[in-house]
Amino acid sequence: MELQQLRYFQTVARMEHMTQAAEELNITQLALSRTISRLEEDIGVPLFERKGRHIRLNRYGEIFLAHLERSFLELDQAKKKINDIARIENLSVSIATTNVSIFPSLVSAFLLQYPDIRIRQYLRSDINMYQLLEKGEIDMCISSEPIEGPDVQWDPLFTDELLLLVPREERFIHRQDIRLVEVADERFISSTTNYDSSNWLEHVCQQAGFAPKISFEGNDSVVIGEMVSLGLGLSFIPKHLWDKFSEILKDRLHVLTMTEPHCTMTTGISRITGRYLPTAAHTFYSFAIQRTWDEKNGHSVF
Image (cartoon, rainbow, N blue to C red):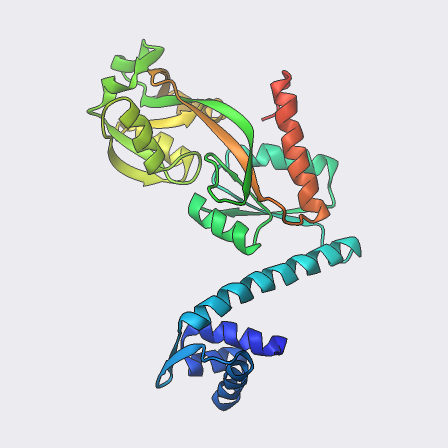
C-alpha cells in the first residue's frame, strides 16, 4: 500500500467522479482506475460502488476513509513538529475568530514582544471554526462562545458588559438603564460576526420573555451603528466597542445598561487538546492566557 495510492483514493472519494479526479491529479483515467483497483486488492474488499464514470464510497470505503484522514492528520502533525524542532517551519500562527473587536489590541501587544512571528487571521463562524481546528488547518480560535467539541480546550480571555444600542431620541436619552422587555416591540439589528449571532440575540431576548423581530443582520459595527442612529432598529454592543466609537457617531447614538437580564459576553481562546502546537502558536496561546491573568489582577489590557 503506497502513499500515492492513498492520496488518489482520497481524491476520488471526495470528487465521486473518476474523470474529474484524474484531471485534478493530472493522470489518465486508466492509470487512476488501476491504482484504485490495486488498493482494493490490497485491502481485500471493494471500496466503491460504481455507476459509469460516477463512483461512490460503500460502507467499507467510508470506514477506510475515516481512518485514512486521521492518519494523514497525524502525519501532518508529525511533519509540523519535526519542522519546528529543526527551525524549518515558518514562524506563523493561524487563528480563526468571530470577535474582531479585541483582535487588533491582542495582536499588536503580542507583536511588540515577538516581531518575527506572523499572524494569519480568518473570520469564521463557530461551526466552521471547529471544522478547521479538527482538520488542523488553523492553530486556534478566538470566539465569543465556547467552541463545542469533545477534544476542545476553551480558556476565557475577556468578559465585557453588553449594552443596548439605541438612537439618541427623547424616549431614551434621559435614561441610563432599561429592562429588555420594555423594547419587546422594537425591531433589532443583529451582528453576524463581530461579537454575537442572531441565535445569541434571540437567546438573550427569550430570557427577557419575547422573540426579537430582526430586521437586518450585518458584520460591520459602524454600519450597524449608522442604522441604529437612523431609527431602523436597536442592537447590542460590548462596552469596550462602544468606547471606541467615534464621537461623531456617538452624537447620534445612546447606550443603556440592561438590568433584566443583565448581559455579559466572554471571549475565549480554543485549541485541540493533546495536539502538538508549533512554538510560535504555543507562544501566542500562552501570551493570550497571561493577558487574562493580568486583567484579573487589575491591569486593563484590551
